[in-house]
Length: 467
Image 1 (cartoon, rainbow, N blue to C red):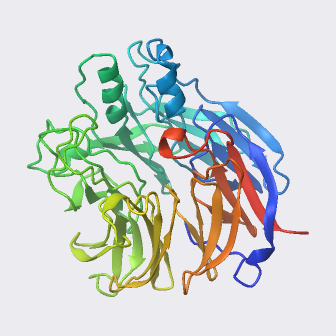
Image 2: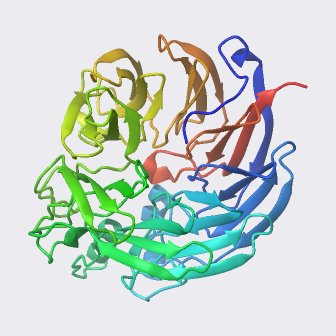
């Protein structure tokens, strides 16, 4: 959710101040969640935390698993590890993605499992179902047999089931193998899992490369990096990343709709074909969808509902929710060639879409766009120099809040894009989506150095009005 109900607006936003800041053991890149007047977050070292939303006092913290240890070979390359700011080979770890709460159960998926193999300490990710009130585990399940697979995607629940997506760290592992003068062959593919919500029983699982009848079953990659949306009672919509070498999958770099009942394909919209990319063997443009495709009202769509998703190529796509056909697409950069493009989810409110894109020039700048939801026309565009981010903003009343790796959190006026409020955490980097609960703003802190952040501050920041 990116549209929140609150009393915060342009008339009083200048009164916001830092209410509390809580420390955690590692990076918080998942959105803070609200439960029973508490704030729940999870970190890259496998810890979960529950803080009192008013005071920031710790209610509980628990480590659900022990991440892989740093590989012995890489301990002998201290300069490399110092530059990266994260022990190789695990440059994503733990609960780096997002989680969700349903029926008092907190569902959290990991990138890595427990300590893994000796070569690169890879271990398959797991899904945990935890009682939100206590942090006790209700059930847990492995997500794959492949040691470099895990989940960064936001899971989604309906009344009885939870749906989880699978991606992999094959790209990182390939570099680690190269540094050890070892050969590496990617094996991981994207997958979708359906579990019974309260028992953990697996109902079905589908590989993304198996969804299209004439796709190549030998294709690798097409992982699910963003989360899921449920636009209709029987539809589950998600997006995929690039393939890991040839043959490329027809389901890569795509937005797909499948049946919630059995995972059968309903439609596939492929934005970029034949995109086969690995860090040391690029055979494509690395034009992933790294976001959650979200439904929004659009008069041009057949059912007046389109699916919005931004790609790393800098384009925002509006796709008919019933047919999977393109309604419109809009280039969201500011006089620049794409670099990392659109990495955030859209935010839809009152007939408009708000989304940002990372630019290559000026370096690490953010281009923030307000777009007409019916036509795709850009209504205003603001370029923020010298910043970088990977998170989704939040709308409340007439404000659009954003946060970045420089430790800035700020609000833009929805109607004009003009800055209405700005504050900064010293030596901090905001890595999570913004959440607004009970007239307070919450954001997770901590981004690894290799992504442009700082390891100095990890935790949660809360902003609110003075008493």
